[in-house]
Image 1: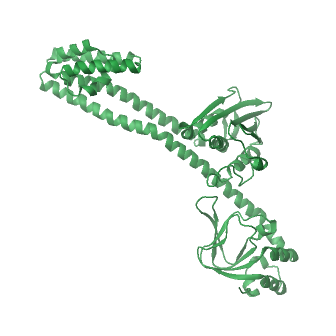
Image 2: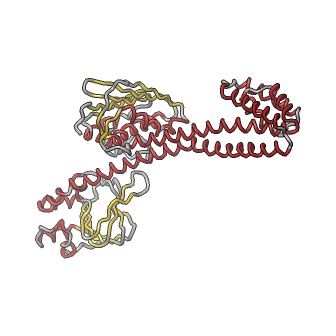
Image 3: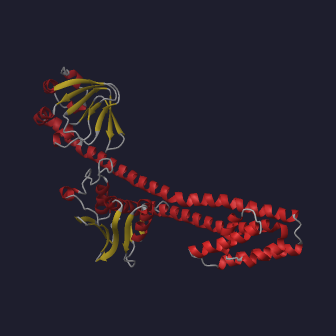
Length: 466
């Protein structure tokens, strides 16, 4: 590979303060590489890559974190890359990919360090960029963690809304059928010549069934089955078509064989129509109740999400800490529903309200509770405890899972440290939790972990500096 000429390096602003002789030293230490579009120049988490001088083309910066590539920045020639990582000895936390065909001059790490210290003006330019670069990466981490929390909330909401929405849709369809049956029955009464007096009797019998249904306590399974069986046998003996469809709502209403006999006496040849009419009105009432319950559940879930994100309030809000915990549990409810995980609430309901960054604090509860669920798998106990300790409120999230591995216990709040399997976590959650609790709310966050008991303790001062 050839070395670049000093003239090729001159446009790179890293060398603005160097004379031609000094620049020639850098050119002699570099090797030029031609990189095709979409080829990886430096892999994510690679060892310090050395100084990369982009002489022509564009380079795409990507974050992977065991997931799909996430383009975050485009660098255009002439510029330089990899210097900070090479000076600090830290791995590169992003992947560099040729966005277009590129011409890159590379100074290997050891040669770059030697030249950088030999030319303090270059070293100074690199160090001036440390703050902005790390600030940019930190902001990216925070944004991605917010999106992860939003994704958790969206997934939870989708799961939680599915059941009441499906129930409402099913009840609406059945209610339509019941209304059609009632409407059709009125026409059949006319066609079969039901007299006014008999019609009045049928209306009274319908009201009797409705009143019985409204005041009735649910039968146990065996009694309900016996009642349905008796009514079904009687209606079949009466020649009622579709008797098996009518037996359940009539039995649930508590009507008996004597009631059937009075219907038959008043309706005559329209007995089947009269029974279908009464059964449909009974079903309509039950279905309306199902619709009301389903829509109430949907409304409660929407209210929970609004509370979770504090969408209708300002960024700094006065909250009952339990409100955020409960809405977070609602959002994460789908992850608990099909497990044997037991949830224990040990709340001190007399705690004062806090003035906090509400939506940010809910990210704390989401990460801690979600991590506890993942740690347990399908079985175990999660205990959420709130208490007051002097001038502070504490929230403890406890689980009886395997605990934090000892080798990372001291670094669990550092960025990119994760206890999860590859592809299951970014390692940003607890780092973001720590930032929110400590930096944003002047609190403290600690963990005490051993096999069978892990406790994350969030401590928040009641008097906040907001």
